Image 1 (cartoon, rainbow, N blue to C red):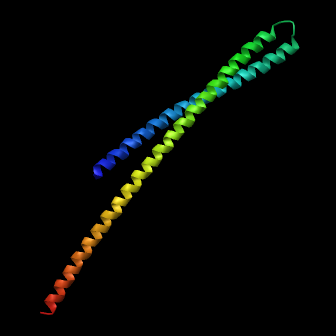
Image 2 (cartoon, one colour; image 1 turned 45 degrees about the horizontal axis):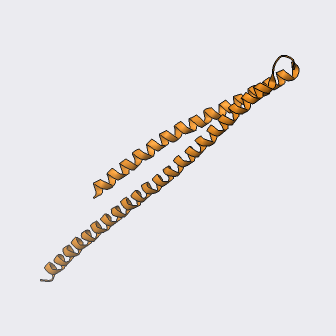
Image 3 (cartoon, rainbow, N blue to C red; image 1 turned 120 degrees about the vertical axis):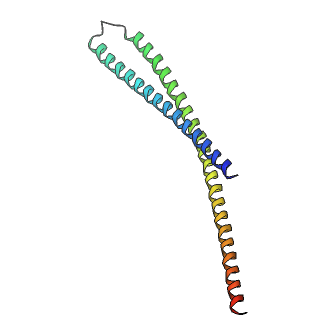
Length: 138
């Protein structure tokens, strides 16, 4: 019975580690998307300044349309990855609750075992005391 609890703890620890790895990948992906969005906005602002200084050289409307499409796609990807991250965090929260339950069960078993040992020790000491008393008074 005790071995099965250890196995469950190890399995749960492995699952949590796996979820952490996945979470880290998703967080890195979110950071990359945020950086792409920041660079896109920065490029747009630079392009806007250039067009303001040179209005005859290019068609800023077409550039703005492409910018808005790219921005919308990036923002949707960021929202999607944030939802995935939140989902992974919820899963990990449940796993931590289960792991805590295993720890509580383990602690209760340990307390029960210590209590049983103390009771056995007390019985042994009582028996020794009783035998000593009987020997003295015979």
